[in-house]
Image (cartoon, rainbow over all chains, first blue to last red; front, top):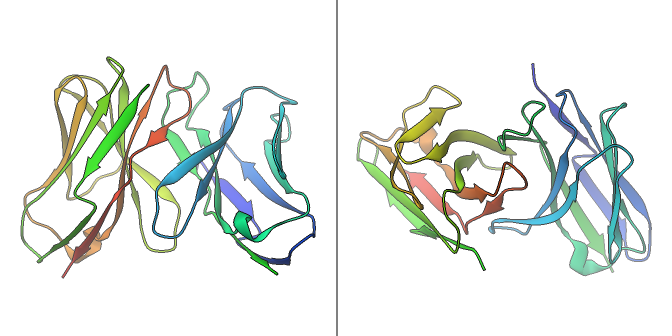
Length: 113
Length: 111
């Protein structure tokens, strides 16, 4: 069965702290995507990781991909309230990039002042 | 630049009524198009995808159908809605099977 599992599913943290969200997947895809969703809103693309060892950073967020371990991480540095949202990782259903994505359950991040 | 439009934003429909949700993409040609559904508090599930006019693939058995009458138009339909069809429906497009770009979504409540 194709699976994408995120942990934790819920994360409450203080402003200024660091934390990592993990995404494990079972497909043979070599690409992984991170999205952000604000409450009641659509998904916003954050990162596209295209190969093993890929690392991308945008502001306080940094994503990495290890295709051999089938693991991606989303690291949050010095969290601020504006980062409060639900974060999803997603992978293609199969190698060869069909564009059909399987999503993790999402990690809801709550940053407290 | 490319944009994706999805409507309506919110819909409340009685059980047994028909459904039609529409999605259009501007600024690109022959995009791959997708319908996803997000049940309350859960991740997204791919329902349908299309690589061209009239070409629809269904990913899960369900009470819904999809059609692509024009290159940049994707429609999600149902003849008779069920309570379990409630959810947040998102249309997406993708260039060359890369990342998906999502519309604003339709929140459907079946009552």
